[in-house]
Length: 135
Image (tube, rainbow, N blue to C red; front, side, top):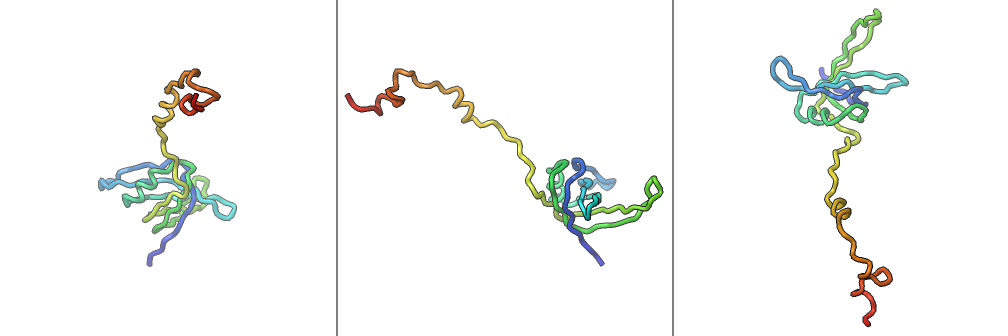
């Protein structure tokens, strides 16, 4: 039997690209998910190239949804309480809001700043002489 889950949340810190012992690359992140007035954390391990690429574009605080198979295991925390470790192996990772792209300054703004204005004598009532009434 196989099951899948859809998790929506935000990375609690930026994702990391790692390499397994077998030499295969994977991306990992911890996703913070709000659920019933509590916060759950999911470990996300992306092995597919498309899921890795999308996960690596995201940063801390970006919103995402990820769908795939999962594993849930109990563990004993340092304080002695039993807790649950949730791991998601996504087939699909989708940014819910696209991260901002770096913007390059446009050449038009630079040209506008350096262009010289025509001399004031060329204007009559704010219009170039050739546009004015013929004399």
